[in-house]
Length: 139
Picture 1 (spheres, helix red, strand yellow):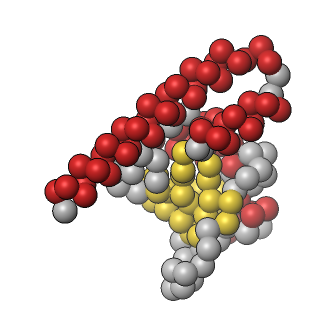
Picture 2 (cartoon, rainbow, N blue to C red):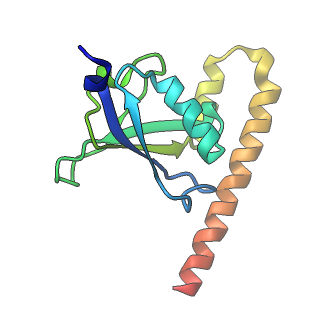
């Protein structure tokens, strides 16, 4: 199998509050690329920490009603999830309650880091809310 056979044209789109205004990226990515590596790419591009990202994808088969499928295994690759050519990968921000749940499973020495993370997320959520309110008033 030649490498070019496994290169996928993929659109990367941010739905996170602070970067959803940025235009989507179109990239040719190997189907062997792991979710974690895609998160790193998105982190550089959209400025959202890898551990705050939740990814999902939608296949582009002229049927926009297809439900986004979560890319919820960091060490699995695009091929594993069946991501095809012209798919759209969405980056969302984890909500605060999920970080609480994740935090209860993680070891306790990073509780301070967790608290700082929550603070930032809550700040971003209130900014997003303000942003939506302003948009409503304008529109």
